Length: 466
Image (cartoon, rainbow, N blue to C red; front, side):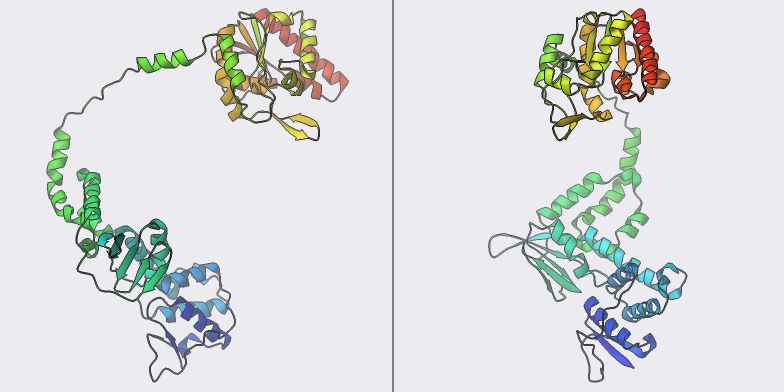
């Protein structure tokens, strides 16, 4: 029989050293006696710190060990070594066998420790004590069921990092001085933990959040056992609140429902209206002063054409050449549009031409700036400008060239080739057709001629509708 000595409390390091040594010697669990505390005259086998090679276990097993060693059950080390032994001897998925008696018992121990940790997180209360150095020092007393003091230390350090505090428990203590965490021996409840302003704050907070209509004393006792009440200042108010709950609920039921007073924000609406541009010229100045949503563009490209134009044509966004010149539809796609308008018998000068997005978006490839399509979010960002712009122009019909323009005008994705033709936009009679850049990308001459003829026909139809 081998006797293994582990220190009192949660001796995770001692257990790991013992497991390495026992596993290296192929020592079966029934041949090991685990002892907690100081060695006696009859303890003949204390593990050395460096005994045995590392033991590789599944992650879930390691996590189960870290939790269960914190339990106060004196058999916890023996149970855990049985778990390790069986896993090392072919049962790698043992923890998945929830009906196994060993696994079931370890799950119960694990759950009890986790619940105890949760209770300490929730129910520990600090109180201010006089500090000989003149600063602020906080002390808390808590009575955990298990050896969880070291396990909860990181939580309280992170939560109360800027405070100097001490946590006292019958199973150990912690002290934090804003820089160093020190673990100490078990303690007794100090007599000086009287209620202070922190305690008063907790009580006021609890009273203000108490809902008498949802009172359930049984659930309250289950979630906040009475053993913690002595150290929680807010619990002093519970008996009175429970007694008063029925009367408070009845008063709530008898009270007339108050109709909320409506506030008419005429002044705010009028102020917003005054802040909006009152002309197309002012709107264009606002657009010019605005930074591009995606950095890189040289300038904003404004709309071009007369106010009151019967037909407005909206494209996607400026291209490289438009960005350099500051005018819409002057690049290759714009030149193709101009040729198609001439073929359709439409004077470009009589139209209003603009884009859904006002700045050029691109990626740099050497000396070239390659066009990138705007995202739906970027289209939404510029939509207010576009709709305000059309409000000043007041066209009879708005033509959307491509999916981006159709999205901006309709507020929804549009399948251009399937839905091309007349369409109701947001506040405007509309017409959807392809963007001239689509024609430039077509592979064959014959296909390009056919598509261009369809595009010219669309422009003629739109002009007739306008």
